[in-house]
Image 1 (spheres, one colour):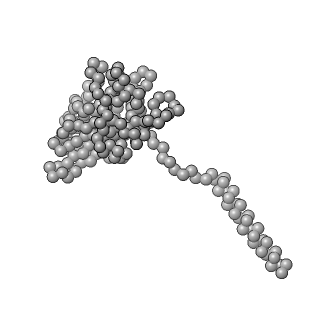
Image 2: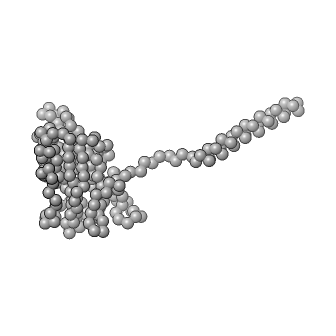
Image 3: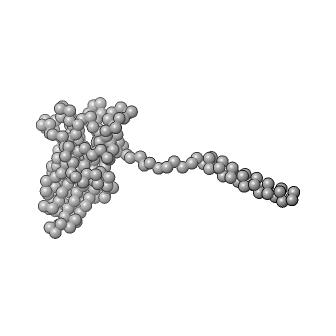
Length: 212
């Protein structure tokens, strides 16, 4: 869900009616969650709401470096895409989020509701047991359909805690799988072994030449 706010955003009210789960992510979310941030769209966690029905609503501040007029034309669209985890996890809590497990998302009406400071508020309602990582995508096209802005936010993590919920970007860190380099000692041992083998073969050849 998207809503424009004042320069200082209003806090989430616990009196809100529990919304439905945001389980209809836009079709291009696979690209969105894996895209690097472009630096001109910033997303920051600011509140958690337990809806007391098995769902939770996370709210975020969003700021664009572009002018309000340039990002709120009728051809603008703001998407929010989130992934979670489905594999068993040996640590306490839900499984770590994985980019392949896209589950949640929302899409703004047109134009996106940015205020005069190029700020807006985004909310995402998820199963309270899910830890999530999500990224925003703002795309603006002109009247001819040409893309004039294609912005991706930073990746933001959020999870539940024993006392509520919090932002936690560390759950979104993906470990790169890199072939392990041989240990230095092993390389040295292999190198010395090869040198010894060459020296031994040369010595044997010289001995046969002397005996001939």
